[in-house]
Length: 278
Picture 1 (cartoon, rainbow, N blue to C red):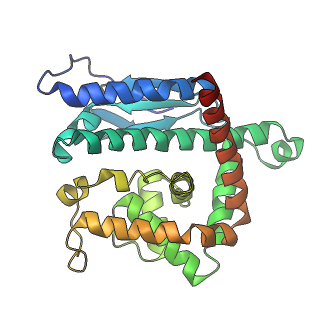
Picture 2 (picture 1 turned 180 degrees about the vertical axis):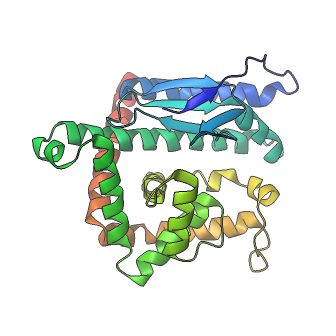
């Protein structure tokens, strides 16, 4: 799990609305997280240590033990989350969707990790073949990227997913993607975990976390948008391309298809439980 630098400061009282929305969305998600056995915590850290260096924290982070993938926990970073209120022009509905989608993103990541751990721990063959559950997880991600990139079309679709996630229009080759994965996450192939998450969100009829950023993109990133007018429109076009490509992605990678079945089965089980209690 990452080392966090906690700054003990009282919540600023400048604008109560984003805090109320953030609190309500966390409360909304907690029953599902509890049912899944996923921990949840809120950090007021303004700096996060990664690779021994201080970095700006993300909105949320899925954390787990190195090696055995245990103790899965989602950390919400308060300050960047509240700061998005201004970026989204204080639009309450858009901000709520942004938070909801981001929590869903980390829930899907957590389920990815937990299903891999469960498969690994329950298989004598896998435990003898791979030293740790984490090394098996890396193997699966590598296998998916290998299957997806056997064709030019698959490579282009992976690059589209990467452009969405990294907010970087320059990712037009697998080599460029490998370099960015290594630079930002310490290993190539990381993007696959985000691609799985994007596909799950799409298959459940939800906005991807990237789409939910909406107008915040126009404030933070500069792309050539002449054809689309705004970065938000460009984002929607790219996400639309990915949506249409989901069946193709699944057909290209049997390993991806298998992972999706396990993740979606878990999500559907939780949804069924909550409907029965309602």
